[in-house]
Length: 331
Image (cartoon, rainbow, N blue to C red; front, side):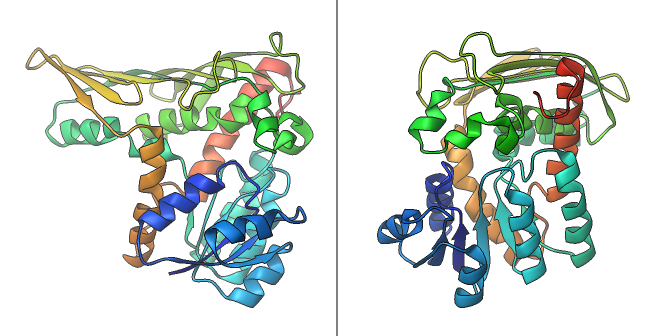
């Protein structure tokens, strides 16, 4: 599988390179970044030919698959070009500044029957596997409520990673909610099986770091059937360590799950039992993405998360910002 990578100055590049290399039998044939010298430095470590223009790279290398990243404001144009090139690809979220950027891409991708994978990697949590197993056994019952919290270290982490544009809402489309909160929204949509969602209330804060982007967001959601969701996203953890403060909880009439990143607690009423399991953490979930994505492509199956999944999460993010500050961009 000959793979090209677009905008390798992105901070997820190393994770995606490792993930797809773990899939085996892949070759990096080209890497690009609009910043002079960035692609060349990356190519010296990873292999492949370096380019500043991704359009030129795709034409010159003719890859079998593309891993696309980039500044959020630039992502729609990149995605459209790769779609029109007919190459299957994975693209880092959020693929735009708002849902309106993603909507026409969903329409185009579905018209072309294109393969576009989005790394909403918490879909690889063992929590979903266990929930599905209990559902198949008729042991879940009505779904009640959901909570998902992702709190990473302070916003200067992005300056240290050389992607200071993440702190500019005009380029990033918001702060922690748009960036890491998308995982929490996608989780609620997964739990409610795609129901319509209402944003009941929301608040954001910039008071600690005083940046233009929000450093914390909390929102209360309700699905069409009445499932309640509370989500939190932040850059307010007091450390740069990977993982920060992460926790996912879901409750049904018979089950209660708590995903704490490295452990999963499962409790069920019908046998009055609780168990705590070791599970893959965030890093390992990224590692699964490349192998699973290429297996799905080769097997003619859709990716674990599609452009439409990204779009639905982006719609709710826009609504949360609208409720919190009166603007779909959080500023």
